[in-house]
Image (cartoon, rainbow, N blue to C red; front, side, top):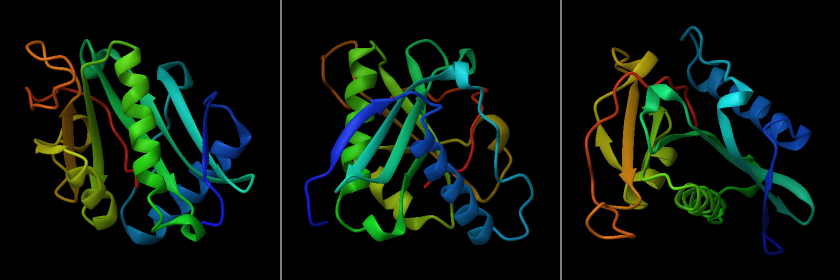
Length: 178
């Protein structure tokens, strides 16, 4: 990256993040050729925060938080984490993830969950290196062998700021993300 990235919170409907999500879905369709229904339509009303990263004014990456009754009280799901290929390998995904975690804590959320796929080793590596621990597959991917689910407790009831693990979510809806 030639310039420092800027991260801003935008509405889910932001056209730059919509374009990045479309690019993500196209990439996932290619990676998971032959897998039906990669794209899962998300209800805009459930999306509580979306972060857009720009580099030199160009939309470079995004990610969102989804809070729904299915994820449980105080829990949100990471959705549509994506960095455009030209901007990968520079730590941008980690900056987006950290920004979303900070937003979650500010909103009083204690835990984040996510689903990704086995053909996204870079996503799995990011989440594991950021302290996310494997959990049982949940929601629409509960019986999907190609899915991997993770969670991270952001704030422990015993120690504010702790990243200790906790119970698994039940019934949360999900979709593939990178």
